[in-house]
Length: 43
Image (cartoon, rainbow, N blue to C red; front, side, top):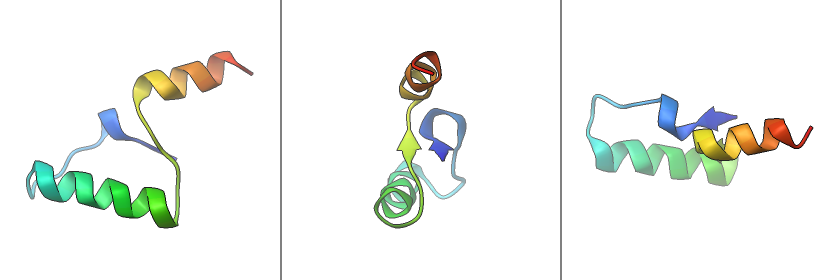
């Protein structure tokens, strides 16, 4: 799981979002901090 609000890239915003989209479509869940907190609250 990757929290998109908690990571950054030194290669620019465009490549940062592209990497998150690639991860979301192939190997992991990409969530915002709010989505993550909501999921924790649902447990």
